[in-house]
Image (cartoon, helix red, strand yellow):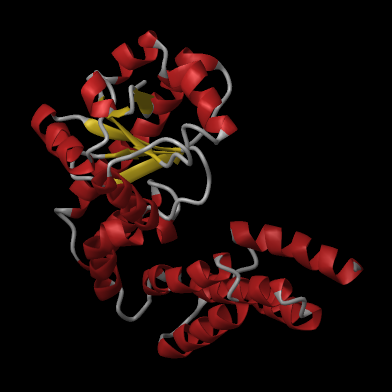
Length: 288
């Protein structure tokens, strides 16, 4: 793998090695031309111990590169602390770090040729063969997504919205990927404008989850209250709304408020999969 190297004071980019590219735009163009996906590695080549291990155990292995390049254009976005980088590459990488909400190192995203992510992973022990098997398993998410998108082409109304929902639900954390699928998200919310399918709330609640992950509990509660007033909630969508409220109040150490919210969530759909976990949560909180 072409990690950043300084040789005689010169920067040797992954692009120059012919294996890993560091120009994201050029990489997506190549992926479209060659009808391949992209494997995008966010790494810290000279400070991140897990990144260095992943490189040594997997990415720098010739067997991995030869096999992976059959299906992927390989892209390295490096964030070194000591090694020099061209300003253009550094600025590109910082922008992509923000766009992909990178907080863990290393992070590996799999993208389709249009640049839309469909899976995410990171360091995994076991060497190159195990990692290649993991990548093949993750590629199946794209197959599920694409089958659902194809099914949506012949459907209308709420049925179409459900196919689109299945497509997006197959690719991982919806909140992280919202910007990449903004057109599909907007259509789902339009198709389920009255929230009869619970999808309008599901896709509108991303802003609440984002605030919650960022530790802005008061902001999450305010956004959630606005959402809950803006649309009818019943069944699973009501359960999810009050589950989010209970989770947020619990983070704020409001035990009484979180228990009350979780009870409403349970009563909204007691036989659901979430209902089972809510019973366990309530038992644990009430025992405290």
